[in-house]
Image 1: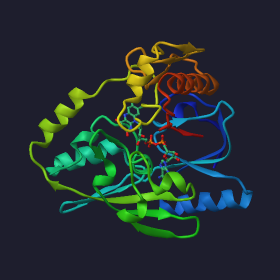
Image 2: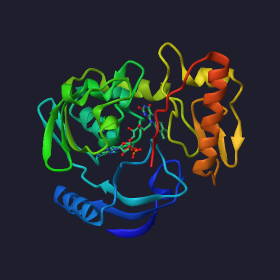
Image 3: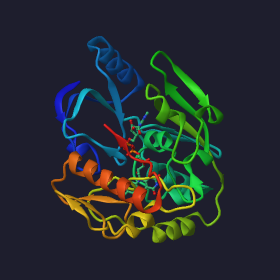
Length: 276
Ligand SMILES: Cc1cc2nc3c(=O)[nH]c(=O)nc-3n(C[C@H](O)[C@H](O)[C@H](O)COP(=O)(O)OP(=O)(O)OC[C@H]3O[C@@H](n4cnc5c(N)ncnc54)[C@H](O)[C@@H]3O)c2cc1C
C-alpha cells in the first residue's frame, strides 16, 4: 500500500487530487489483504479501473484506492471468462481471434471489464449485459457468483451502481459463432466519433427518446468554457480537459448544462459518469 498517490494519471480526464492510500493488486489474495488492511484502518475502499468514466475530486480521496491488475482472459468453447482488470478491448480482440461474435460493437470503448459491467457499457442497441452469463464478486465478506438476473442490468445501470460494496472480480460471457467479425469491428470503429483531448466519454445518459448531446447543443452550450474545462465543440455531451482543468470547473459546467436543459426542455439530465 502506497501513501499520498496522485490520481491524475490514473484516469483519462487527467484530473484529481491524491489518494491517501493506493494499491495495485496482482491476485485475489493480494486484493483481500489490501481490503482487510483498509478495514483495520477503518477507511473506505474505492475500486478503480482505467478511470475512463470517473471524475476525480481535486480534494482526492481520504481512503484506499485499489486497482485490480487481474487481467486473465480464458476461453472454453464459446464462453470467455475475463478477470475484472482486463481491458474490454482485449476481450473484443480475443473474441475476434476465436471467431466469436456479438461484441464487435465494443471496439473503441475504453476501460476494464470491471468498469464495463459496473456501468453496463454499450452503444445504441447493444450493452455488455447482452453477453454476461455470470459475475464473480467480493461482497465484503466472501466471494460469490451472481447470475446475470441477479445483476439487475438496465441502460447504463446495474446492481453494482446501487451497491458500492460489491467488488467485481471476474465475469463469464457467452458468445455466438462469429460472422465477418473483423468487417463488423471495422464498421463500428468507422462510425465512432473520436473525442480529441482528455475526457471521460459521455457525461449524461440519453433521456428516453432524446440525445443528451443534441439537447445540450440546442441550448447553444458547445464550446462553453470554465477554466480549462470545455464543453466539446464537436459533441455537447463531452467535456474536454484542455490541460489543467479542475474537478470544480467540470462540476460548474455540469450545473450550467443541467440548468439550461431543464429551462429550455423541462428535462432533468442524469449523469452517466461516476465520482471519486
Ligand atoms: C473516449 C471515451 C469514449 C467512451 N465511449 C463509451 C461508449 O461508447 N460507451 C460506454 O458505455 N462508455 C463509454 N465511455 C465511458 C467508459 O469507457 C466506460 O464507462 C467504461 O466501461 C469504464 O470502465 P473503467 O475501467 O475505465 O471504469 P472506471 O472509470 O475506472 O470506473 C467507473 C466505475 O466503475 C467502478 N468499477 C470499476 N471496476 C470495478 C470493479 N472491479 N468492481 C466494482 N466496481 C468497479 C468504479 O468504482 C467506478 O465507480 C467512454 C469513455 C471515453 C474516455
